[in-house]
Amino acid sequence: MKYISTRNAAHSVSGCEAILTGISPDGGLFVPESFPQVSSDDIERMTDMSYAERSAYIMGLYLDEFSQEELLSIAEKAYARFEDEDACPLTKIEEGLYLLELWHGPTFAFKDVALTVLPQLISHSREKKGEALTTLVLVATSGDTGKAALEGFKDVKGTEIMVFYPDEGVSDMQKLQMITTGGENTYVAGIRGNFDDAQTAVKQIFTDPDVAAKLREKGYVMSSANSINWGRLLPQIAYYFSAYADLLGSGEIDKGDEVNFCVPTGNFGNILAGYYASRMGLPVRKLVCASNINNVLTDFFTTGEYDISRVFHKTISPSMDILISSNLERLIFEITGRDDAKLRELMAALKADGKYAVDPLLIKKEFSIFEAGYADEEETMETIYNTFDEYGYLVDPHTSVAVSVYNKYYATSGDFTPCVVLSTASPYKFAADVYEAVGESRVDDPFKAVKRLHLLTGMEVPEGIANLEAAEIRFRDVLQREEIKEKVLEKVTEK
Ligand SMILES: *Cc1c(COP(=O)(O)O)cnc(C)c1O
Image (tube, rainbow, N blue to C red; front, side, top):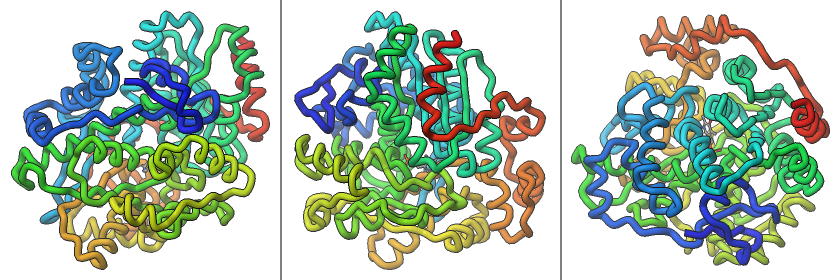
């Protein structure tokens, strides 16, 4: 399988190369040349597999430079770090409504599903390619990617990792998780600005030939752990198949039945993996794109216009506080019939004018698999309360956005297809807001909120959260976004 750039379809690379470079030098994202097909018999066979086996099977369809044993050993090692034997369990909360829990990994958010795998894919790719330079992984994070990437790359030979997060745009717990990270090869800094500022700055560094040359001189080559990297998206495709296999295996659905997925969305990486799964043959009826009040994607799916000139809101679902959703570029590539010239034009317009448009009829007709909606802050709080009240099930604010959007879709569409809502974080990562939502007064201290939430709900507190209270803070830098480039160059010179 070869991978082509969304901005230059003539530029094709192998899977290892796509994973090692992260982003194409032309600024485009790598996409597979075609989508391998999975039949309903293949899916039925997945019902008997462990999560690691399902993951290795799906990854094997795309990574022909890796042997099946190699991928299985990677997946087994990754998912042994999850709390449960079943890494991504499916919980039924009501007839036809299921939550796919993707937060049982080391940092309690869905990013772990891919970021326990990616560092291994990079290490193996380095070996296969005989890469002698150190891989410098640069990460922009809206909160959860940062810690998951740090845990994934911490002390991994041949790699160093630098993470940039919006200093005032993440939850207390998310920030503490990052700035207390150990490891000899890690660096973390806050930046003044929002996630879009961090992501734009980091993407510019990736495609800056001056930086690349200076790094090379010092023995480094850059890669990305953001979902622009194919090695981040690929492991995410597997859990869509896994959820379906679980529904089939438990008799909730019959072979070939369609299922809906509702996905809390920010950078469009999670839901894009679901779209790719559908292109591979997974019977998906609707993919519901759920946003918070930063609802640029809701507007896009309704009008065809993507316009980021709007107020940026800080919300209680910070990992979705994003206006420039990088991975939408990969969907636009499909919407335009894989027209790389058109993509160059649209992405240049986005950079220059902050907007672009595609034919809304085309989205409605050819891409009718997508539905979109958003939940405001009040609805998000209320849905946390209602979900706990009705089902005794505690959701985090991101998952709550998706449950709320799904409820609205269900009430207005008359579509009774079984629906899997992707549950993306442990409620304890956002304990202060969740505690307030379930009807109690506000407690700002995150650890007090954790304790009270535990007393109230009896839900087990992950050790990695409880331990943070006593953890030593290792990183205190807060940078202007213009300083990120300097910091990167400074770090590699220090060594
Ligand atoms: C990252 C994240 C999201 C959004 O996922 P994207 O792939 O960026 O669309 C949603 N919820 C949580 C908890 C996250 O960490």
